[in-house]
Length: 357
Image (tube, rainbow, N blue to C red; front, side, top):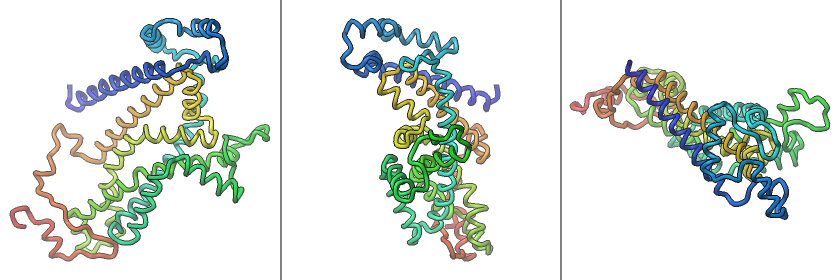
């Protein structure tokens, strides 16, 4: 088997084992929590006899390890079970709510990445000047602010004070057949909240990557040849600085979904995050484990996609053994900044071999 094929097979096996471990931990942790679905259905004043009868009807009367084996048996047959609370197939229920979450996370995550690239390039270009410090302060402030606070502030400003956008939901219930415009208006505030969370999480790392690339010899050589700084930044620095960002995007998917749980709860947006929160409160174990399974699959696929994109961007990663950076003898130089032009002497010094420095 080719080396690339062996690595792909190893990654797939590792992904399958990670997913199985994730689902196993989620299953036993969910069942270890106090309470049960019988109390969510009948209330806390239900008699013990009636609670035991309902638990037996739901398949909860056997030990947890037997429930775990039964759940895996149903999963291998292509079934995720039925919701205790809604009495619906979990697969169909997740499909209905996943469409809403896909729209929210697709728009919010995409807009957040655009903000990250634009803000990170600006921050990295002026990393040691006052505009960079201002952008860095904004990023730290957003990073330190919880997502529900950001969402609440947006609701107060754009819905409460200005009245431009609806405060929550997915459509206006007073409209019999809401159109795409109504859905879009309800999507704006939660999507912007997700975008700000993504920007706060990634922008500073991308700015540091841009600053590091500006210190590399190729950037100083391009400046010494008279190439304008915007051209250096966009044509040479950005393609190299974006590679670490791709890896961070794949690793940030679980955090983005965690943020969507809070955001969907704040805006009463019927997505997977809102369904996860509701299922956790109601001890709806099949729905809860099904959502964990879906999120795990999306996260693993996202990480594999990030590795694939990185391999496409960096030819060295397509080789079986990449050359370590230390063999190149590269040392960090002072990065060029906006408006600076490197001198030929500094460029030649940056390109000199380690023995001649």
